[in-house]
Length: 339
Image 1 (spheres, rainbow, N blue to C red):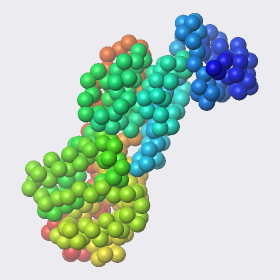
Image 2: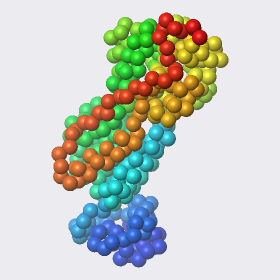
Image 3: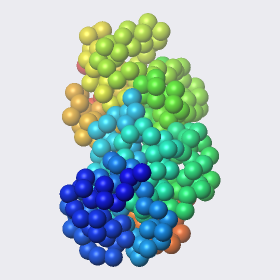
Image 4: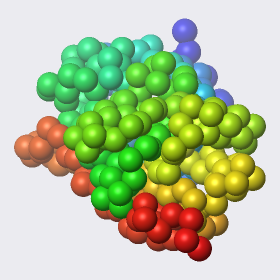
């Protein structure tokens, strides 16, 4: 069993400093505190119940759980994480980042310790195995993402269903009749990750409402996969004139592959993406897109969590409405081929 002296030796501090970090009875510099907390996490130290009972104040640390699974676009995840850290500091809190694929065991380990006051959980699946434990814990939590059943949970995210629908609505409004959704990598769908499922459901709802011919294609996040998918798209949908892309790494490879196949964007094919604004703006051509508001999601998740820590009532569901910006990648159907 790991002892407090083991933590102290690992962190290069005295046992009393470790005790003060856990109890909050004395002010400890941010650098020393972070070093002690890192040693606690690495060694798996768990204060016994009596030690926890001696704590006189909060730890002023939030846990951010980000399982970096395959198929996840890491830059967007890290942008949310950076926003969480920045917002937490404004509330005088630090953030303990947990990236291992630990699932329920990792959640229980953190919850059973005195390391953190509350938790933010990312990469939420429709039937996430972590949810029963989250409901049982006595610690406040906020999910960035929505499971299929969100009762007794606090969730925030972009309204991905509305985002998928907005992109299809855009293409339908421009007169396109045959469209496709190039979605997340297959493993993201296999895990039933909430955001991917909701983009697809919104897209399908819109194309059904408009009576469009449409298909959904998961795509590996590689240039080779993008090129192979373009060949498949043109073979299966020869009348294709509009594409929605929700897969950041393949946006540019897809456009290049379509161009190589004789379909220029937007002259021969309109493209609308769901991605951060900076990616859409720097694409060639700049893509019309629904923005992923990573900074706002991270900031508001922390605000919700701090309000819960202070005993305030917060909304159970916060869905950020999609914002579609038109750029240079889509044209009305009647203008396709005129340039």
